[in-house]
Image 1 (spheres, rainbow, N blue to C red):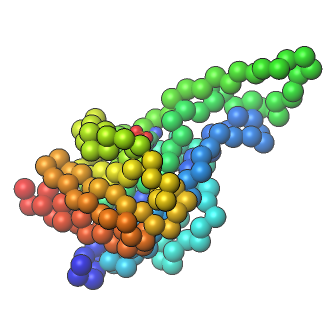
Image 2 (image 1 turned 90 degrees about the vertical axis):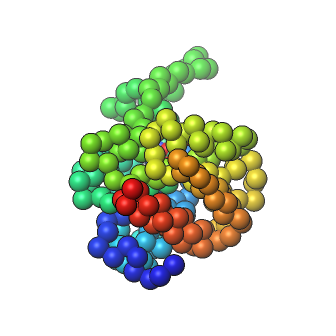
Image 3 (image 1 turned 90 degrees about the horizontal axis):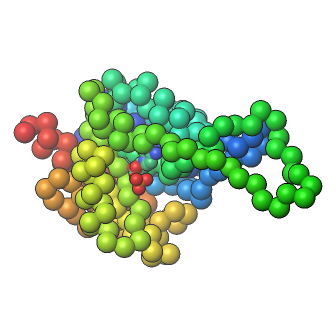
Length: 224
Ligand code: C5P
């Protein structure tokens, strides 16, 4: 991978979990660490790109020269992504976006009620950020992730088509040694007419391999 391949390009990456507020002190979220997205941000900087990380809450330091936009909810993440879309060359969605959010956020802390042993929180579906970006008239080259526990190739290819992505990075999360909080990862990359296995390696190395694959497909698409 020749250095500086992404010079002058703007790479936008979503990373980390989203937090969906229930009331002023509570939320629904997940265990995403954000490590994969931050590693891709670093790898893109190393290739000379201008990099914006649209990040949900994480404990990770911002890589040098990366601009980070902090968001909490999926709706905020979508708004930030759309605001940048006309200047984005490559959009990489690594965030673990909550599929649903509470249908309303209580204005005050919800109190427990004596004698009521159950409570119901109504949820509504969140917008699909990567699909919205991929279907936008000003769409950049768009890359998604897929965490699957079985039938990885089938589900990943179905997602690639349904969300109209240029590429999808799929990992088998039934393997507990890799994924979410780990420093290592293994994955398979799919695009409309091909695939490539990325065997177990550090997330830093995987980020470089993913970007190399993105660059190759992107050049191929531009020249098609
Ligand atoms: O459909 P699924 O959640 O498995 O798809 C995962 C991919 O879609 C990831 O790239 C994730 O960042 C993205 N996604 C999104 N907005 C959502 C749900 C998923 O951008 N609401």
